[in-house]
Length: 336
Image 1: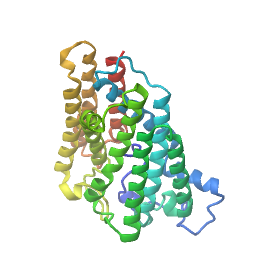
Image 2: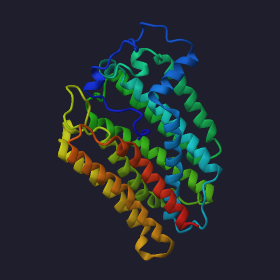
Image 3: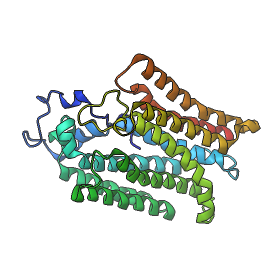
Image 4: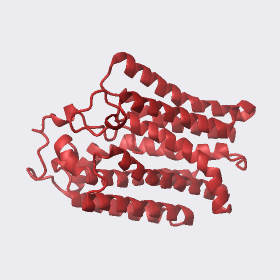
């Protein structure tokens, strides 16, 4: 799960984009270290969008946890949630670094204007940035043992993934399904981290691991199905380019769209099953979980009727924030 639209899928326009203003790596001096990092942030990790996304992810997921837990009386985001949002932001930055390093050979051919591909930032810069980010994450969460262990496990797993691809060439970059399956534990661990912070902040961290795991499992399904929708639609393309990485090559266009819509509907259905808004009272806020499905359905209708080449960009960017904002509102309403 990455900030929406932070890394658009390559298409024919990306392959043929003019490169006069973005020379290949090594053809110009990329400038001082700070300038190189600035180029990377602007081109691969736009801070305003990433900050908003990290914030709504942290508070939205925590709102879902609060709404689903009958033991929570009055919940509001606090300093622990702020620290979790900062953790998500820096963690997403580290993951973006990992993705750009893994995709460098592909980007040099098909996305030559990206910062690393054009030499505006150097690989060694990104290794320094990821190392500093990892150290910051561990220090920031040193006071919460469960959260610290989960973030450490995620960082180790990400390092192993990057090492396997860079050293062994596995999985192949065009094996999109294998790649996303191998990357899924990264997202699971980050959401478990948010749950660990929630338990710590609400004083519920005395539960056994088994009991906490049983409680959080359906909530993870809600978030992961929403993330699956986003992952699918951001690579939906009606006519893939010659070397374009897209699930349409694997499943076909109609099946990919059906899987995307099914993931959005499934996410909302599991949320409703957990929250049971039909019982009335404050639980009625749970019906808000249906709103992101409306976003997805309207986008599918527009994509089908207009014959557009790609999924509507507004729906790609807006779906996940809509999921998290709706669950934040649900959490605030149920636990008010």
